[in-house]
Amino acid sequence: MTSGKYGLSRRKLLGGLGAIGVASTGAGLGTSAYFSDEESFEDNSLEAGQLDLNVDWEEHYNYPQLYGFDNPTEGLDVRRSEPGDDEDYVGLPNPTDPLLWIHKDDLGDYMTNTAIEAFPDPNDDGRQEIVGDAFEHDVFDPCRDGADLPEDLEPDSNGIGRTDNADTNSDGERHPLVHLDDVKPGDFGELTLSYHICDNPGYVWLTGELVDEDGGTLTEPEEAVDSDNTANLADYVQTVWWYDDGDNVFNRTDCEGVLYMTNHSANDPSTLYKVELAVDNGIATATTDKLVDLGDNDKNADDLDFAKTHIAASTDGATIYAVAESGEGLARYDTDNGDLEYVPIDSDEALNKITQAAVDTDGRLWIGSHNDDTLFEIADPDADTVEVTDQFDLDIDIEGADNVFASSGQLYLYTNADNALYTVNLLTGDVIEVAELETGEDLTGLAISESGRGNFVASVTENTEIIEFDLDGTVQERYEFDGDLTDHTYGDLTTGALCEQEFTVGDGGTLGDDLDALEDGVQLDDLGIKECFQPGFTRYIGFAWWIPRDVENEIQGDSLSFDVGFYTEQCRHNDDPSGPSSD
Image (cartoon, rainbow, N blue to C red; front, side, top):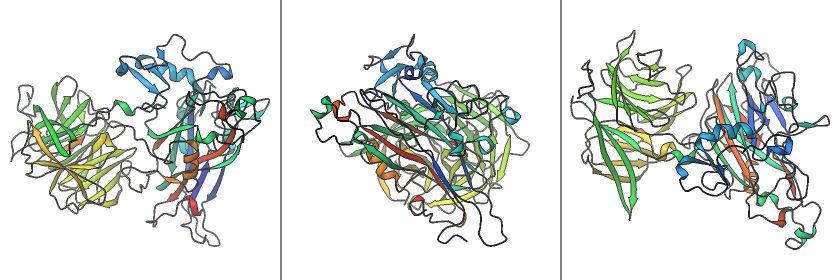
């Protein structure tokens, strides 16, 4: 067996943004690629199970005219200064510091117009296609059709692979993944990488390293400000990384960071509240706003039981779904207009002793029953007829359970039977313990603050506050109830709209800082947990780069190249993964 390893690992480097040129130079922003593979045990008769990582991508550039494309802003409402009514506009590439603003109604067209390459792209239009007769069974299968590097960086005008156009090759020479000539201050680009764990669960790291940097020819304008002709372009290129939802846009500013909570006593119908957490002058407050009494109104024509209600929010925060302990029906509350409607739940098995509700990133509602420790799926909770479409028997006691968070293909489920946090694979029902959450409090509802980007927050049985705590169970803050509810008895808690989560690569936010950090790898996670990613799901990493408009002649002629990619390592029998730095 391979010494010092767990035997199964896979590295694919998608290669870096290389040779960036500014002003009068004709350099590019590009990538190279390499990979290593350790998928078999040596010198014995055992055949290893496979651990494979496949990738695909779509890339955008705000000046595609460089490659013969049309002006991407023609006929669109695009502003280069902040509009007065900025709620109707999306800032790119980083919404916290945009270079331009696009009206929401024109965002789809703008993204189409700025797409310059993708994989797979059977029709060579620069946009990713995953459905069509180019694929077996007319659907792209990432574990069958996804890119293996470096061979799949070859443009493929006759197959299902990489776009074949002026961006990806010239005069028969294949260009690296991100390849831009004559880049100027004010330019920006975006790349969304999809990665797919195949066959077995794996930990995943983002990796990379600087390959080359050069100050280039010293021009007269640059000599006036940088007579040493320093190769410092990486210190001026700004970057942001985030867990994308697949739309190639960092939508961080759309989230309000609100929570929703139910409260009930004994077997009375639950009441739904909106909760906002704030700290002002050292005083932490949970302001509660009563929204509606669940079950106790004229619209509940079937007199469905809504005592001891559990709630979950749609991923956009527009709908709160409520299911009572009896499992008789589903209530849907519209957070925009306050409308409330009720529908029965059609199930072949009796639903009772419901203890939690959750919505995954695909919009499916999952409800758990501690009668048989079973998780039930409702594929379309917005349908006129709501029905259970699947179920899993879980290998844990979920009495007193609550959902905490959903990521692609799995739920994070807490149970106070053993004060532990688990991941549940939504393809197989497999359960893995990831953390102990011993706070010393009797938790009754659990969620994540800051629209899914912050610490744990929990309501406490028969208490007057919401507590905030970290993965170690250490309480960080106590928010005293204020507003319509000041004494909480029992109930549930859920996050509203989920925000796309930015993650830090380098401390300074520049390409140079990122490359320093990527040499050792940056482990991808949810909630700060060393996440074991389940196979069979698509996950996205968004990466945007830009050159600020105030950068001047000091970077004329400079260039650099670097590698960036992914590394994966098996989870089984591997509680302390070594990561790429030791590979």
